[in-house]
Length: 309
Image (cartoon, rainbow, N blue to C red; front, side, top):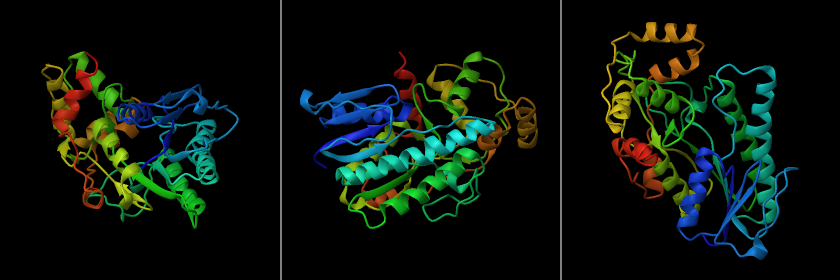
């Protein structure tokens, strides 16, 4: 797709990787965050000022990639629940309306596999029902519904992407917790967690998002996406240790005890997510966009530590 691409949330974990990949690919890119704007391959006269007053999409932008969002809050307060609504629903809707007004051709919204629930014996697909289990996921369900209303009948295409847990260098949330635990060198209670899991590396997710920008078949679609290389929580922890050249002792703690113990420590939500089966059938994404994940899970985990060296 020709034209400038605007990345919203360009200083966040996903947004900065999307911005950098587009810039390195020679695309004209505008990056917007709460604190500053970034530009790549764009002449000075096109580098407009972005204030914090509201959503704004620059003239000449052909696609908007919305990466901003509020997440990784274990037990949100009333004020934080309101913030979920403001940041995860109202903000993308505002940018969606601005994208339509600016004549953008495509709007990519990064949702979450969590809209389908914390886990399932059967793989999640785009047609799986909604079963959000926390305020973050509920805000994503609401945002998707509001965005579909906004784009109904518009000339701008809406593309929704629902990834599982994203891992990589400096990834927040549960991945950061797992890395920190492995680095402590203590025995860990993950040996009994043989639940199948899908993950996606930041490199694979960015590859897919770039494909969504450029591919004609992406318009109007919703995609679930992953590494297409499922593992178990237990083996994922082993991969994290191996990528750092460490050995790790995993204790065979049963799931119920794992969840109960972490719940007492205020980490019940994280424990339930890590111990539940959650896999993704991303065949629709791969077939529709003729896309293959560039990296295996093992390669993706190793890349997350090579980036820190």
